[in-house]
Length: 129
Image (tube, rainbow, N blue to C red; front, side, top):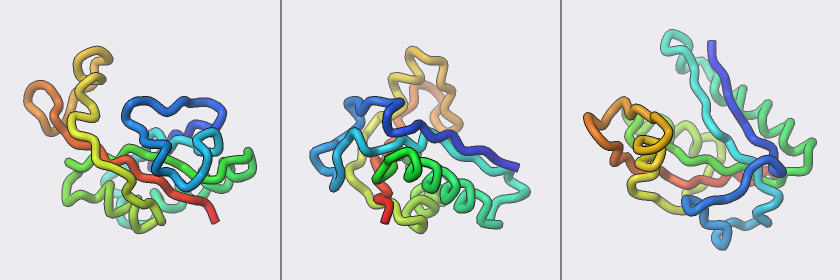
């Protein structure tokens, strides 16, 4: 019905799409919420939020103090941003052309852009309390 990929705080490095100077916690204490998806026929049943809570619990047990995500701002109805914000995520910075590199060099096929991806990404941080 769905899945979530989360990288432990020791298993990823901030890149040019990250702004650690704006994070309220040390960058080496931040896990990375890579992706999340729920089957369309199961959306709206809090499955995504439940998976996120499980990821937060696991990341916290491993020593993380926060989690970062790059949210696709072209999602229908901006649902990805609203979902992450509803669960405590705070906007750090917007990044134009966030997925262009992936489209050029990693085979990313944007579901919105006809040619080269021009979608904006939102760098969002969810601090664990």
